[in-house]
Structure formats: structure tokens, C-alpha cells
Image (cartoon, rainbow, N blue to C red; front, top):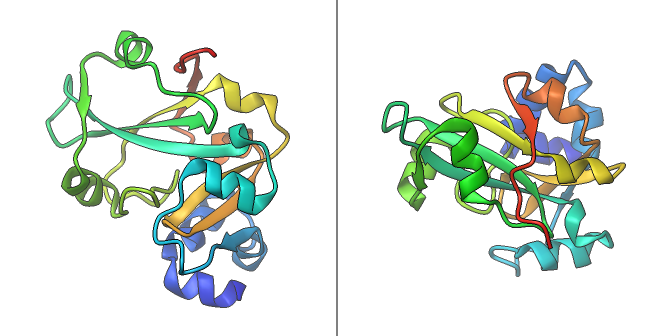
Length: 171
């Protein structure tokens, strides 16, 4: 199954090479959900994996309006938190909502499958500090039904241009 995932999702190959790890080993960290589930909600993914909702790393794409209109901003938050757009704007400047076409053009992924890595165009990246509460998290692997397991600290190696900040609303 892992070799099939590598063939279908080249982002896993790029992620592994970026992280300096074996592609096969990284692919073994992947889980593919049933095709019956067209797009999984965060809660459904957590239940299917048997993990806490917060362990699902949500990849949210915004338009970074202080840069060119084509630059994406990737905000990775814990599944049990919502991004606080005011906190994000305070860090990076004006942001706007991204529609499905903008997400696809700038990342190469469909909404629901945006991976932290292997984007078509390099986004500005923020990681929410609330992810650090967990030993392991699950992030989209380039497809709405495929996720891969990693440690929050792995994001530093996968996305060295990213930075950690408090960018979520607190419960």
C-alpha cells in the first residue's frame, strides 16, 4: 500500500527528501481513508485514526494581501482550534480568504488535502504553538483521504521557512 501512495502522491516523496528521511519509511507513516468518505472532516479523521481531535493538523490557506495577490499563507493549526485571523494579521499583515481555485493554483492541492509541503509556489507559513502539546500529529498528504504521521517538531525540517506562533483562538 505504501508504494501505491508514493506513486499517487508525489508530495510524500518531496516531504521525505526534504526531511532527509527514507521515502518508503515516510510512506509507511501514511494512512488512507475509505473512498466512501469523499472529504473527511477533522472530527471524522480523528475518530478513524483513534486520536485526539487536536492531533489532526489543519492546513489553512489564506491570501497574503500585503504581498503579491498570488502569495499564499499556510497556517497549520491543531484540529481542536480555529485560526485567529486577527493574530495572524498582526504577524504577517493583511490576509484574505482563499477560494478553492486560489488554493489549487498556489498549492497544487484541493481543499481538504493541502499538505504542509510540496506546494507549487512557496507559501508564507505559520505553525500554531498549540500543536506542541502532542507527541505526534497527523497532516494531509496531498489528498483529502490521505494523512501522514509526524512529530510537531518535524515541521521545522519539512518547512524550514515556517515559524511557530500563537495563531489560534483559545477554547
